[in-house]
Image 1 (cartoon, rainbow, N blue to C red):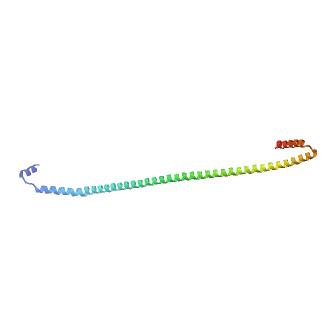
Image 2 (cartoon, rainbow, N blue to C red):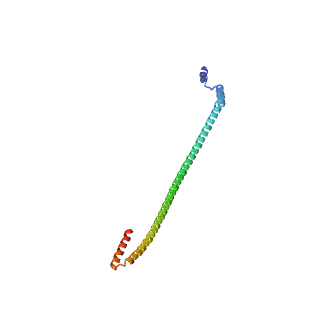
Image 3 (spheres, rainbow, N blue to C red):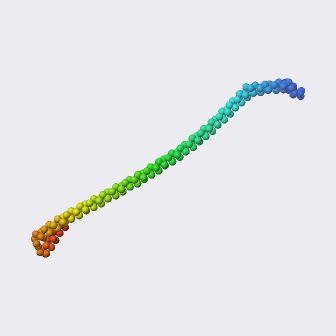
Length: 171
């Protein structure tokens, strides 16, 4: 401590001490650079590289997730459109089948109606033919009775009316 005071009292700078301290400082700086700054900077660069890789990976993952989301949205749209198309197709098929069933029912009803009309006409013809036969038979019978009785006009008219009444009742 006295040397410091003595140096201050003499008024000059001790260059030897300054050089020794400067040399010690430079040696310390070199040692720090080699053993502290170098590894520390390497660690910092590795850390920076790791962080950059993580950011890049996160960005890539985000882009992949966005692409996946876009694909899922598109697939959902496609599925909805496909479902709508299937439903529309089913409706059209249902309408077509319904129309076919209605057309078949109308055709069947028309066939049954025509068959019934034909049956009615056939039965009518049979009834008319049977009636003609009966009228002819009755006419022959009346004529034979008239001839057999040789009735006068009044009795003959009464007999014809009776037979006509019988024919009307038998119908």
